[in-house]
Image (cartoon, rainbow over all chains, first blue to last red; front, side, top):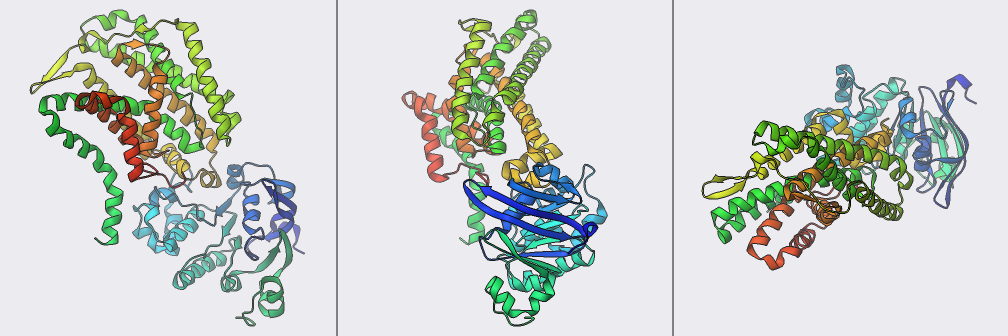
Length: 244
Length: 330
């Protein structure tokens, strides 16, 4: 059980409906400071809904969401974001008509770019420097994802919530992303990642939560799940071999 | 042709439509009428742009279909009549400085009144119908009727004159073509406003947020910005622009009736559809195309004049079903 002051985000018995469909059926999830929590599960089990509920994009019908000791249920999305949560949606949320520079500028404070932060983004994703004045809509899928993550780390954030960062990317680009995310991890950035790519989860994750039918059905350390092939098979339908 | 070139052609072709139209009609009408009608078309286009630009942003940012937009055009026109009435001496005197000052006063009053009405309208009516397109149509059409009748109560049922300022009544001769002075001034004023708007949209943070919000408002909110507050500002600015457009159109027509806004509604929606809903650049090009087409067709084939803009819209939609400059989300 995580210590209370160690916990950055806690969802307790969260229910969310979309229209007349009940999607989340009492989600309980804990994200600890400075750790990478992987949210895993098959398609359509409620992972994205969980992230959107945290961000206030869909309202929880019932339950409690506490971020750094403060309830955020019912708060407007911008107020939640201003608490220091950066969100990268599954579709990346890139503004295609704006340039790379303008996309990044939107994530900065009133004073605009801080050179140190900008250099950090360029260190992680050098391609963004080369495409600085290009329309974001003309970037490749991998470059768009770099821009989305780069935008999320333009300012100091307390929690990064990222929905399937490697979806649809080529293996070479996925490796690049793993390196970039590991760099963030090494800086003790708190991350909540939804990921379908189990290899990425293996490399990145400290903690893991597995969802099924709108509930969390397993929580524990990633290393445990990584070693237990039977558990992988039971929870995720995977058969990758121990420590694969 | 390789794919890269085909993509480039697809991207740039819409920009070529207006110059192509201007050049294509030249042999059919001769230089004199062509120049006169082109200036008239451009003038009409920039005035239509003022009226339509706010509506396209309002739709783009919040998906709000505001059929009451015509009411703000009407309000601007009537307030201009009152404002010009305060300084009647300025417009009857043949003094360019005084005439322009009167025009400026009328523009500011029209924009302020329409913008203020827009603020009240957004607070009382629009905010209750977010995300409900059918309710938006019904309630804004109802509000249009109410506002137009209030205008009749305040200014009376008869059409009111709004004469052009004395120094702007004649024509200047360019080559052998007479060009109305008022049209040139209106063209300049319209272009100044359009350029100012473009600068705000492209050079300021608020403009950046508006452009981003038009594309994906949910993401803008996820970045920590309250799009609702931004939308109120855009709504007020959009209605103020409609008021300015109404003032200029009324003075161009020299007569104001309570139907002045209604008569522009169809054209405004055609412009929005041609340009691509939510796109300000598309709205500008759409407005210029509609202005030019109206003037050219009226000269070349008066019988087709009534349906010329519908025909233009059909042709453009057959070529680009989402308009000339579609936005990703719409």
